[in-house]
Amino acid sequence: MQKTVRRLCAATRERTALLALLPGAGRPLLAVLVAVRVLQALLPAATALVTARLLDAAATPGAGTAGAVLLVGAVLLLGQTCSVFQRPLVTLVRGRIDARHRADVMRLLTRTATLDVVESAEVQALVRAATADPREWIEKTPAEGALGQLSVLVRWVGLVSTAAVVAAWSWWLVPLLVVPAVVVRHLVRGQWVRHFRIWVDGLPENRRAHYWGELTSAPAEAKELRTFGLGAWVVDRRQRHLHAQLDDVWADDLRAAREKWWVLLAAVVPLGAAFVVAAVGTTRGHGTVGALAGLLAAGWGVFSAVTGTGDALMVEGARPVVRAAEALRARLTEPETETVPGAVREIETETRHVPGTATAPEPAAPHVRLEGVTFAYPGSSGPVLRGLDLEIRPGELLAVVGLNGAGKSTLTKVLAGLYEPSAGRVTADGVDVRAIGARAWRRRVTVVHQDFVRYQLSLEDNIALGQVGGDRPWPDPDAVRGAATDAGLGPVVDGLPAGWRTPLARSRTGGVDLSGGQWQQVALARALYATRAGARVLVLDEPTAHLDVRTEAELFRRLAGITQGVSTVLVSHRLSTVRLADRIVLLADGRIAESGTHDELMALGGSYAHMFALQAQRFARGYDDRLETGVLS
Image (tube, rainbow, N blue to C red; front, side, top):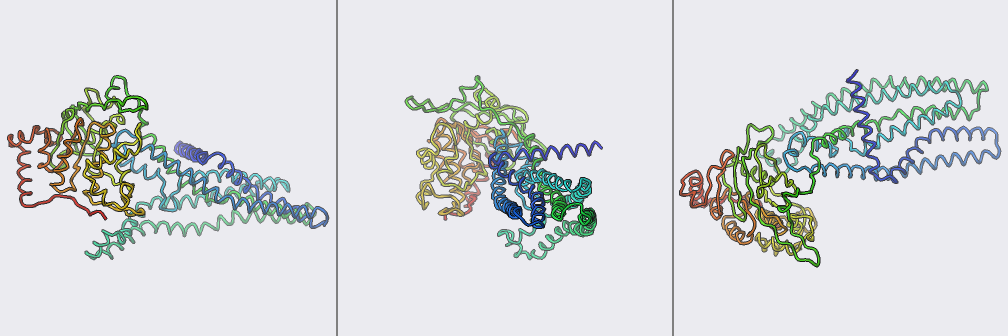
């Protein structure tokens, strides 16, 4: 009993949440749609009334006949008008509600201070459900669910109005028709909900079938299918998953077809009884032929008002979206305040320019320390960083090296405030960056991630994304061109058909794609743009993996002169380049194993010296470790 009550309470809460989405379409538009829907719900009752009046007027010809004909015409015209306007109204309402809902989900995701919450499997599953991008008929958007719930409510308006017409003939016919109509709705809805849940249970098999089906046309996979002769095997896998899902669906289809007889009897018997009683009564002088016709139309209207189940399926399909959105709101952190505590306000001083005043001085690079930092990914076997202590002195070029899996990329994300340490802290000039605030701290830090993003925007916008907002114009053309020059993008710009405004995507009109090395220079220019906007800690995680050794060396020599006043943390697998750094630290087992200049570490003869010697031998043999993926085209 308690379980049933909880389920009903949850269903009521979710249906109410769907209705609460409707004002998001705009109250004037919503009011028009509700009016149209209510008019459509009243049409069966109105049709029954004007039909009765027309037949009675026709039985006694006179002045009333013309008026009755006009009334019938007006009701028919009203019905057609509502039908014409409803489709565009529904399209507008649905588009606005779904757009607003998805924007709300995006805001939730972008306002989280750290990445660990968003990266969890639980949140990723909730995001997929909450964004409501239907692939199957059972998946509905929030707007479809909201409109379905509105239709459910409006149906009862239609039921009451048609029942009132029936009651005008005889009150006792109302329960004779209404009760079976509600029973029929319950039976049909139960069949569809059962079918719906069978589909939901089979979705994992459905997704596996989709996966194997998509392999037959995906460019990379299609090559292997033919190379290894996997075509028949893949088709067989797809068919097996389809049958695992659809065998139960087909069995339920057959069961529903057999149950239709009960639904038919539940509708035909009471309707037939009411019609026979009304017809017999009319022949005996209890009412007119027009009243009989109105009763017959209203009786059928009672059933048509409540027996449709399309709206119920819309609601059922949208309820998981509501649940996922509620869970996301509960799971993700609230937006972080942008107010910086007074104790650390001097760290957060930004470069501001107010017309008529002098420009404020550029903020100095902070003295950053990682003190006993430990971090482990959720579900991992152990921490990646283990009590790590690291100092980043103002204005220095610090290189971080180590074997794969040593925690180098994790270190950069902790430093940027994308992950919070599970133990220890990161400080700037002695103040915990958590007291400064993740967003405020990230305005002081800029990062070139190893898996940088290739935005399908113009070259200018790709670079200017390094710092959006603030008092500077966006994009700042001078800063964009300066950052591009510093990153060595001059020759690339000269080769673009529309220069800075060229879209960097072949799918866009006039667009081109870049090679892996050129894209990496764009990502570097994006970070350098941020330093021109006030960022004072520059973190480079394998920023030149797609460049050859000579281009990389030239780039870093240039960077040494253009990042004065900026602390630079360089993560690279090429030890021939990091030798230029002011200091090098070797990361091993989540801790700093060695620290010093290149010469000091070579003299130490430890792991760094051994790694450098091995790399030098490989390069002497002509090995090139670029990760090249194409050329400007």
